[in-house]
Length: 422
Image (cartoon, rainbow, N blue to C red):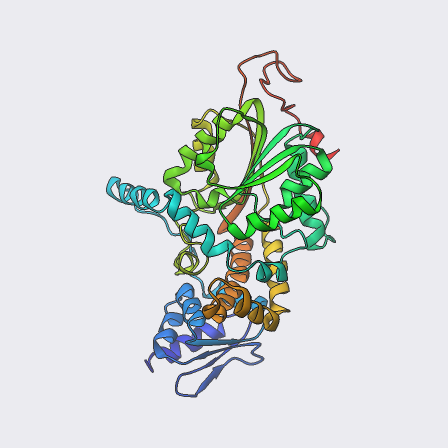
């Protein structure tokens, strides 16, 4: 292992942010002015650093084999230089590999497994999420319409941006697929007068939203159901549908089923907003350098990302027509840094909250460490363009060329963007 030291010293010298290393034998390797220290208790973890396996170093930190001293922003400014030049792994495109990936995806997304995977992430602890999310607990990309917006303001701007894109009108029936802690559901009901139905697989989120509905006296036109999207009744289709930060959990193999269900649930001429994380590369399943494996193990089991072109292909195959797609990638980087900074400022409180309220309280320290890396690492990944965020607005054409503001629209969509910004 001693032979690794010169290689690591060379790596450290090339970093934009100086990092110091505490070796398992007590020696210290550092660059002048080091702002971050990584203390290794095992040589095997140090070998991962030499091999630029960032995800494995993250795993070693979560498992207590590496200690981090310093700011997450400084750490990940340095980490960019440690990641291989192109961490977007291309997939083996042979028919056998495609078949294996499809089978794995299909097997990972049964009704039971999806429920368990959602519980693993979203039911960690409501109080934990409340520490670093905005007051509405909007757990998706914010929209920084102006540079001076706070996180809370940018999240409200995002909610309104979606409602305007969907052209919500009083009395319309809105379905929110994966409604989270109810941010969009309640915003649409209170500001646009819709009759709103939300669905979630998270028991914690369901209970929280139900309480908010009762507190606001909205029981007559807002409801939330604990159910999988595949079980929704198609006999009473909705005027508008939103799916915000949910389709990442669907799985590549189930994407056709997902959009076919959305199509069946939407009235002819209606609009659907599909907002979610997409991959930065055309033909890969996850980030390289071990980063994708880290997220799969500690954060989002069963999560799968597709390039926006693949998503739009499956959307079109279902019969939906894409009418507007917007890339909000840097907005998500800023959102994640806001979450990360908020969590970093409350580490002691976060640890105590997890110890007393988490469904995995015995792993409170591991959960906290995983989220520290996940939030900052995701912010870095969005900044670098390794992953992205797209809002995809689509219609269900009604087949009548006379429908709409312009002949041939076949929907309520005006085929102009002016209405979004008024």
